[in-house]
Length: 208
Image (cartoon, rainbow, N blue to C red):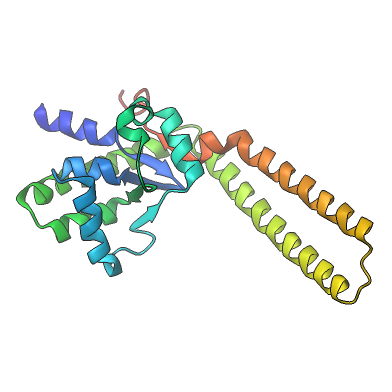
């Protein structure tokens, strides 16, 4: 029973960001019974062992969105971090266990692995999973297209400006048009960013 309780506790800490299941550095440090500072120091000393699919740092928007959904992170305990937090995928958590090399970390890494497996099964069984994936892929495609168009437009404007053939009014119209397109993209992004970027465990699913 105690093992099930610990497993469930870890599952509740796992979040899905950028399509990957991860644990916050703070939560991983708690599980391994070290401070967040010490955990991140050890990671930085062994940074070559942590490529981007093992660990990545949250953006300001991701951190704000996560905090808005989590009562603990809204509190003073999660409010005043000096740096944006790092998150660790399943294999990243296992790598942290290896560099800490403590009895607690080695024992807890087994529970963490089992929790990730259970969480993946739960997410894949979520009826909204495919819809969220489709939205993410569409947003990524639209973002790439927008960035490509922006780069092309800026290059054309720069070339015309160098040749002194770009009227100031025309330039302002192009800039305004670019800003409108940017706002449109941001509107699309904000429409479903909360459901697409960060997905937390739903205890109603997979607990038949």
